[in-house]
Image (cartoon, rainbow, N blue to C red; front, top):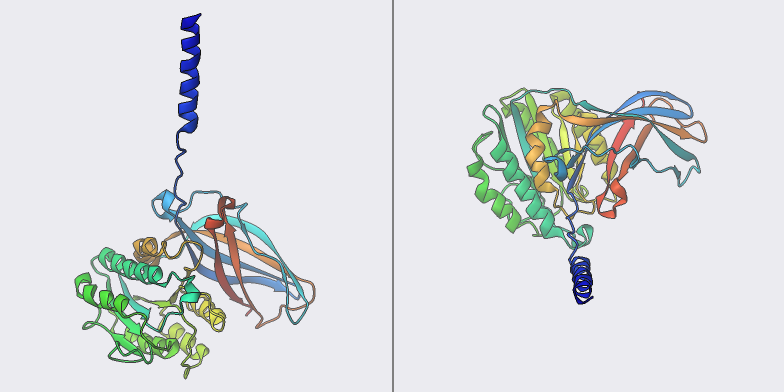
Length: 352
């Protein structure tokens, strides 16, 4: 009887020990959400069919395209127009995995960093995390650049006393494959990122496009602009800069670390109409996905990059879709019903 009692007590102790053992909580995965392209397919007066290619890079899958079945997690929210009262509803017609067009192994890529003053409220008081992530992304991109490719670093602001040339300061002596020459400039740009200054995005981009067109040594020419502000200087129309990029065959790739209240649509339009990508950083990950983005940036720029291709149809309650009509919205992703993994991919489509 005594031995039986000891046996029972031992089992109870084992149960208590295991029940009190701390459950291992795995960290949330890091996601990078990139709109790679958007294009028109067909339309009627009350419907528009279009396709959007995007990538969801996932830290659980070696920082490459997620292997999670996202069919049940991706959607576009219906809405009613504020002024028109027209109801818009969306149907996901198809989704598949594919590859972006191959653009060339050797790239000439220009980085533009926004040095205008940070409004901390735009970053949920996490501005330094975004700035550090931005610096890490650039360092990683430069170091992983392959022989035959080259790059150049620049920064833009107006009224920032740290930048010697405004609206655009270009570092070094032209395109290079030596990442070491940008160690100090990148550190300084992080250190002095919050000095007073406005954002002359358009005039800086216009100047950078001219520079790339005149000095790039590879056919695969790319502009990557980090932006955290609306253009509050002006002077050059958006359509003019977009047209110049298209004439020069230079994609304008936009890395947005905020959701602007004024120029959000123009940034999305610029990326989609010039053949660039759009990475909208400000989701629920506080900029932690920027270094992972830098890890894959060279592969994205070369093309032949694995991605999702989705085809959507938007239905309007009244005739609204005609030649020249534009569609600006974003695809939402609520992966695993986890608020930390909610993100979205903006897109822009124009009916020819």
